[in-house]
Length: 183
Image (cartoon, rainbow, N blue to C red; front, side, top):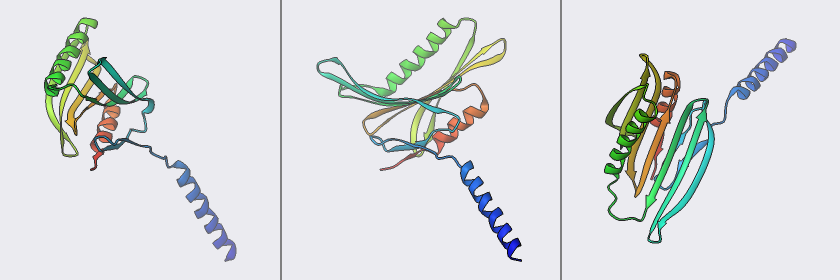
């Protein structure tokens, strides 16, 4: 009886060790300036984390922080930008960037048929302008590009991602949907 109890205890102990070794530790990423917290998809690895300040003129200061996650040909880039320049219409800036990206895609890849859509989505009660570009060649989708943009607490919050499969798209969008804004 003691041998059976010892054997059962050992099997239980070993199975707990195996279960713990299969768990992955997720890293939490934050933009404390806007209260955003999220976990990147496991399939993407942090490639770059940077912040910098630009002074295009002595009176203007632009500060930017960026996180870039990648694997193969899939990318997720999150950035916040703040400028002391007065009178910036961020919604208009976003619209111009949409048009510029679409136009440049068509110019640089003329053999690809590009389609785009614009909409408004919500991430944890915050509205984002969403711009999606899909590129097809010979009827096959070869490019998926999504831009999300919002203005939060005096910062422009930009999220850009490109994906090659519906699985990666779902992982990125689930990660973003599970992100939280905290006060």
